[in-house]
Length: 186
Image (cartoon, rainbow, N blue to C red; front, side, top):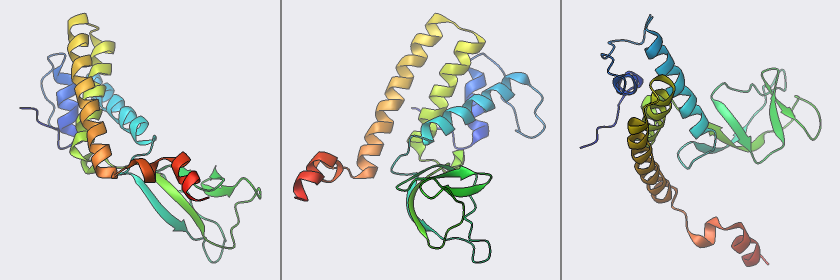
């Protein structure tokens, strides 16, 4: 039976367990270099995976400017904005088309949002932990047998992640294919 880590601490203990290190009790004031490396790798894998944009971390929204400054603050948990030619500049939304950070009206975008580890769907936490474990093991030990096992486990976790995405995203051939959508709109 595979148990998915519920918290970042659980995931880090699973990662450092691959090299035989004893579990840690807290992430606060942790001075152990392996634990810190495991945490850094886990967070990096999570951010990289989430930045691709998935059905569970993309939100369609309208961003409204502040009434006084006419600026829209760019939040730290926004990995990417889609649907408008806007980017982050100096902490605010910046309109590339008009070359300004001042907005008179709302901007419609799809936000790819960074979700905290504990709030990720279970299959995502498992995949992130499995990939982080593989990377950690390769950098720390580099054992060929462990790498082979980690690769197999990662492949299985990825398949489960993709099955979840297909189910949760409720994709279908007609609605999800841009070519078919263009042909139907004629």
